[in-house]
Image (cartoon, rainbow, N blue to C red):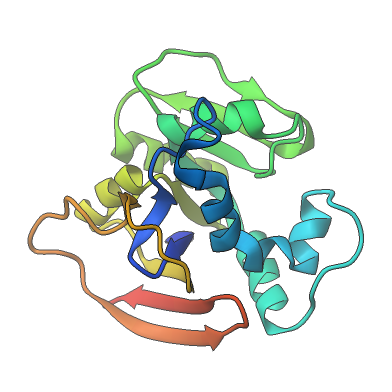
Length: 209
């Protein structure tokens, strides 16, 4: 059975997403520029560009190798309805997951099959049922809890996350969606497994003790 992990970008002041980050408010508090600065390290990597059909080029090296290994380990993704709703408007037809994706939602909807191997399944029975279905889909590969912050918090409270992979970027949001909120005691305990310093982010991996 594979591991359950989180792989996200995080601002220096602890936010996963800037305040008002919705497709309905593209200019709100300049969130697009803030998000771009948070994720600039990733967009410049060769493997990311190849995997998302952005064309040739991009950086190679240890950070690119990290992006590749993370992508290749994923057998299924789990996300919340808010993340899906925003992505449904912004993702290309070839959605950028290429795996089954379980969407936590109250909405009843048939699976949505996209080109390139992505199928969205809409799970109405809570995070444990989504995790069970994701495990069936992933087989021996790993499951990524893609977000948003509230979904990651639910799985942290269930002590279901084995690893946290955080790309800590030197940007300040000043507000938005915090990663580590609404956690219950006793909180899960992690230890530092790996630190990789890149020019635009510090890449941290924590494993559960």
